[in-house]
Length: 132
Image 1 (tube, one colour):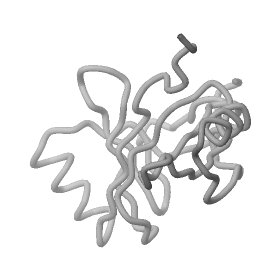
Image 2 (image 1 turned 180 degrees about the horizontal axis):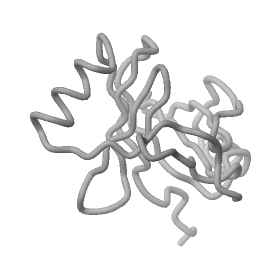
Image 3 (image 1 turned 135 degrees about the vertical axis):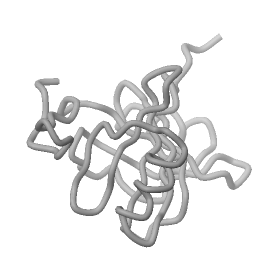
């Protein structure tokens, strides 16, 4: 049997009309702690692990991002298994990302942390990356 490709669910990304409304609902009302924040998105802690709920105002539909060791290797493996590349790989703040489809039409968003985790200030605003 092959080594599993997906390490974990990195995050569930959900669009919101504005960050303050999203933080009021998912943070204040539903109790998820703010981990990091940029101008267009915010990561909220999911307490039973290190997966995040990411709210954003970037206009993208909801998605589940799957963490892999290396996006280029994941793309090669998924395509070789019968999937297809939709977009990428492309650079993101923490590493690389790609959007693929499995043979059944399901969208697979994969990312790696090749640039390191986000560094934040005392208010949770992103100020850089930890070394990878």
